[in-house]
Image 1 (cartoon, helix red, strand yellow):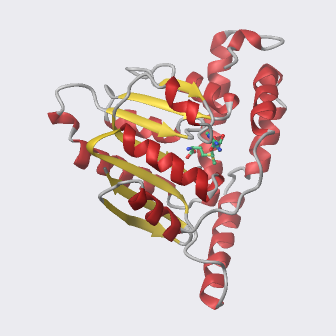
Image 2 (cartoon, rainbow, N blue to C red):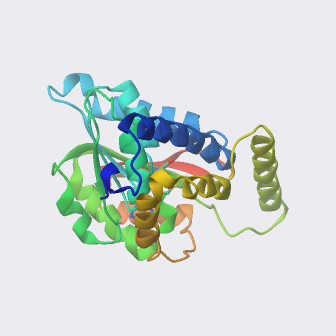
Length: 270
Ligand SMILES: C[S@@+](CC[C@H](N)C(=O)[O-])C[C@H]1O[C@@H](n2cnc3c(N)ncnc32)[C@H](O)[C@@H]1O
């Protein structure tokens, strides 16, 4: 992963930290354009981690793995509730990982930030621990194909402590859009997007344009382009596919615990 000193015209560390904080705050608003109840989803995830992993009874720090962490949104919510947790955050994008690292540089037990591709089985070899109480992911796994997801779920099952929990909050389409009800749901999604944009949040494309215009991030933008150039379009697997793939991976109890339009939160117990 690139370091701050790789930037062509490095600015003082404080400036980079302030810049990252600003960009991550805008990232959060930008994501809420598309996921209206994103904060509720995070709160539910953290509640489930607390209930299943029982951090107070562990006798050691809670261990959480955040898959496709982006700039660390889910990681930040976990650390806000459990400041002593050992959180490992991994993502394909070196730029987002660097923003997360700068933004959360002052966390009590800083997260371990890793750059890795979840489609490549070697990502696991980078992990600092072999077992986790919870594995979480938000708004990301729809980028993987069905076959890649099945492999990933088997790996995640192997990484969880017995009875550990996997939580995936993501775009989980119930079925192909057809019929009036599905059209209405799409329409409501668009209305919400318009409302959030009118209230001042940035669209996905606008956020990325802003990042690309920051000279201090030139080397991270180049690393982002190199890493994401290998990614291709994917048809997100259905909600039913995720549930079945998790059962096949060995999870004992799997269900949807929350959904809103096409967004869902899947909870699976190892
Ligand atoms: C919309 S962002 C979500 C980030 C963060 N989890 C959140 O909720 O804000 C999707 C993330 O998935 C990551 N991603 C996509 N494919 C990946 C892969 N194969 N391996 C690791 N990360 C991946 C992207 O780099 C990006 O950070």
